[in-house]
Image (cartoon, rainbow, N blue to C red):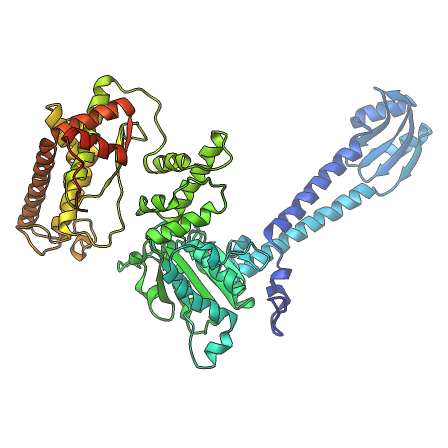
Length: 620
């Protein structure tokens, strides 16, 4: 078999894809016949005057008919003198012998008879249209019976095939995630030289599951595998398999693998596979038919069923590997799981440099600083920051991206677009005190993240923001979590200390702090009164899935009290820290009212001046 072009010796010609006529071709023929018949009808009667038979007889009796030609039941000919501006006429002879021929001869009318060419062609086309309709019905019935493709072609896979003519994507275009690239390099080596593996009896994985948060480059990684291996690459979204008709998904799975086998070695990439690969339910549905489960079953069979599947590798991507069916993850199907994680600082810097290489960057751009300030950013987020910076530079008429453009892009991505409205003096003071409280609790509290920037410029839903320079953390010590709780409640504590009352501006702060405190108690075992216990309440526990409470009411009440105690302690820490440095809080709030935004170096100077001494060196 060469490139999937030759049929096997026993394959019927009607099973060959090249000879299968799609539905739109049949519909096109029928539409053409219908339109052609309409044109014939208009063209045949456009230049003649159609008159009733009684008027025709009256013209004959008046000796105003020169000729008459019989075309079946129709009579056409010419008048001696024009009637209503027409020299030609057309009429229909009623059934029965009316002695018309004798009447015409008596008035010396030239009489002739012939068969209409238009009528013959119209009858032929009508016959062909009926024949095409019968062939169409027969084709649909055959396809539905054989199961090769469902009726109307909806069983055909919609996967898009990319060959060597596609734009080249290699591992050089994928920054960060070196571990994932190493795992996938083995797949590339096999596709390039499969004999080296089969000679020693090695079996290449049938499937590779790419899992990770959105935007981390799972699809790009799959395209890079195809680009490195230089093999046909079929790309399809899992949602394209399932339709309202029963059996469509399974038929499309079969068709996709048939296409991939004809051009093997090849790669099939299924994006968002959790759309069809969710864990099957244990509940029996009487009289029902789950189309998604049929599609999943067909995929399981194609990947590792009775017939061996060689040289076709399935790469799938998902954000939710925890909900996939165990049969899909067993060895022989998705043998290998590759975690495409969020990049660390070095990975973020590599991604920024990759995207910045395609943009005109100024000499003052600090990509290392941006990489340090963006923990938790995915590759897509970082690409968006670079693109927003380029858009901002173009909008302001610059031909290169500057550090100022990067700062504006970072703020826009993190906080949203700047809101163009003026705060009242009272609101401006409250926001300044609130953000100053966040900043100074983080500034003076050991273990907290360093302050990067404080602003009271409204962006998105926030009236002001305090930005911290967070580092990559894979474990959260208890002292760090408690410091974050105090920083989150620092804005509320600042309002209470300076203004004497709190406001609704701390709504999001309270939500963040409560979530942290609840995880401390219920997941991380950091509650002093409960100790090492874990009881998630988000429905993922076996008891919750059965509709049962995940823990006893008494234990849940103790957990709630422990969460409240931790939050109260964090509030007291914030109040004490700001009370000890009240002068610095007043000075920072005043600077924010005057300047709207204060950078890290300016915070150091404001604190040093307010404290009357050099800014204290705080252990981080």
